[in-house]
Image 1 (tube, helix red, strand yellow):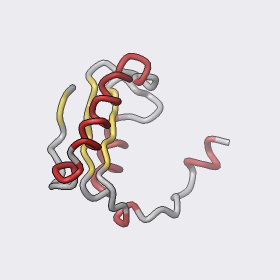
Image 2: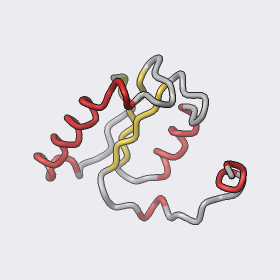
Image 3: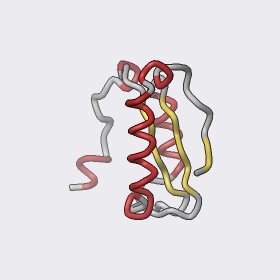
Image 4: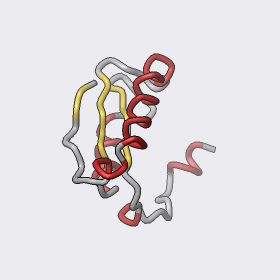
Length: 91
């Protein structure tokens, strides 16, 4: 099933995504490595990529509070969330 999903291009217009987007990636993720996330983040306008040193594929289990806090900040500051993309940051 994975090959059927990942073995062909997806028909998604990433450039057409208008919503502010934040993507997290773990440096120890062997399923979706950081270079793949960097490539995808470059395809989405106003996408912020946050790289988590040492985090693996299920990084969310240890970083859920951070994700929720960042989402809350974006909702609280909708005007500022729609500005230029922020350079890649370490969390």
